[in-house]
Length: 132
Length: 92
Image: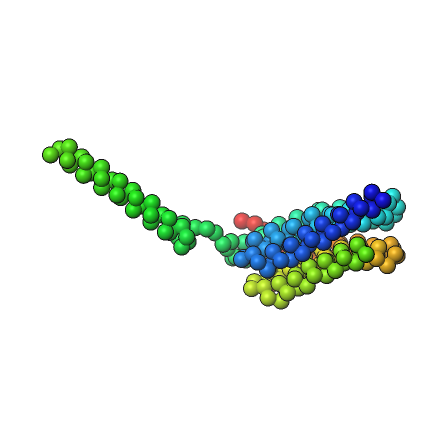
């Protein structure tokens, strides 16, 4: 009974993570961030669902096969993700970066500059006054 | 009951993945979506095995897990080098 409840929790959590990853595939802005969303579904979603199924099967041949599937996914999905990212970099795809020229940063930088200018101007003025 | 819910969730995820594969702006987006679709296929077959009560079907899921990886790597090589012949380009 307890094992049943545990396996149901694992199955539902795995399904939820899958849907979250699928939504992430559509909401993320560029390829490298989508890789992150796909990584969620490849690792924790698959592991939880296979674990839930394994708990339902008990100690049998079926659970051993599920373990084999998990082992294969565990080794191949990071390798596939790495190969994909590597190929995308080689193919000339650039990740979206929050560079200083991005519009949000530019305003802040301009404000900082303005503040600095004011400060230095004040200092100069005080110096001039002191000299006078 | 729970198997049905899980199978439906996996189907929704597969639908989202295939939509990304059709929309995807770059080739790599499409390959990534197809890779995700393949992983979800493995899970769907495994869940279906328990849903129908015939656990022998898990063998097919195992086969899909193996084929999916080889397929993705082969498609990546095809896209990157324009052909599957040759030893591959060495990193500089």
